[in-house]
Image 1 (cartoon, rainbow, N blue to C red):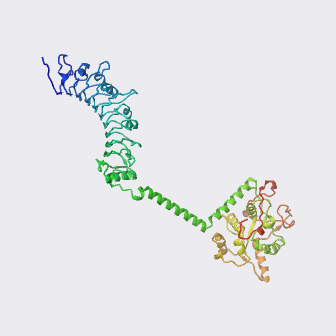
Image 2: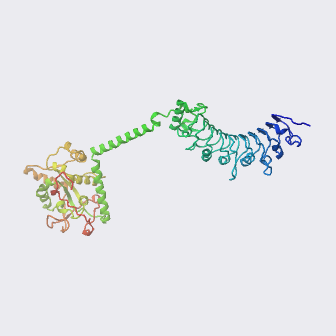
Length: 553
């Protein structure tokens, strides 16, 4: 018999006996072996007594066999005080599938430091708690089917962790927060889609992320890894952006982190125009990547645009036109609410627009000559024909629209009058889509069109292109002026008298006339005869005698 045989190392390789480690109990020489390597012998089960015989082994390598979970770990076996000195356990290249059962088997290996479970079909199913020895510092688990949930059943005491090619598509930050002693982490060849923010590993020095599926990487990706010195991250579908460019530039120039597979394993995948472009050839431009510069340029351009708009508005009096348009819309809205949208004939032959300085000329010259004619003309002036208690803007717009013609008595005072300016603008709005044939210009005094403010651009054009009437200073020439004015106004027909209880404030009842117009020139206006109760409560007085010609009412 063989007695007291001492072997430091036993290698059994390429033997077809499936019961290679089942010996007679009289062979006790396994008790003294330090390193046991049983490779490619096709055995698929480990008897309980065999493990008990290997009590002094420090290395047990049973890789490249046909071991399955149920044949390696027997819950009924008493594994206490078994392999108490074992430091390295290699079960790679077998048919193991359960992380939980492997953890249960090694729970009694009190000195275990390294475990190699690579090239199996390892995975974690269920919610059972995996109890690994805290002494384990090196875990080799590449080429498995771990998936993302398997992080819940991995040793958190690991310093070296190899999970390459294990179908992992997402990193579990809870695991890495617990596995704070990691110094080497290999995640090559997985399906990781993104690098999560807040990834903290204070002692991690080597990280392999090559051959995954993420496309974004930036300076913030590894900011909580102060010990990182070696990085492998090639062969990923990179989005060539400013963040990637900045990360590569900072990393390669400062040399704090060594990118081992730079530059030929780094290619652009997005955008499409940069497909397969080497990342080191990608230069997005200083302005595109400098956020501060982009902000400065954006703010400057915006400020210039705003300044240009303000300047244009100031030069062309845009706020005034906006305000006037707003008044028109408000007046139309109020008229609609009051139900004054029924069709009617024109009430006046002409609306007279004049400044306060020209009021005497209008009352003493213009009105008598036209209203005392036979048949008389019906004229509208604000002092007499505006409805009291209504908004001034409403009165202006309604009476202009109810007048066949609009006569502007032009003088320097007219140009300086804000209300005359409103009346001119409202007349322009009434003429949109038509010609200005309804506008009659009467120059009471000479005006140089070039001296008019820019907001009177339409008036400038009319003075330059439209025939106007000039009030002659010589009495002998004034007769022809009235003949021309009546000719432009047309000949009215006398009709019935009309009371002026609501319109008249300065004159008594006058003869009324209705304008006979061609059918195509008739237009709609507001229906008369509204209740005084339907007007605005706030009363405004359109009294130009109380205002200087350059002021608002």
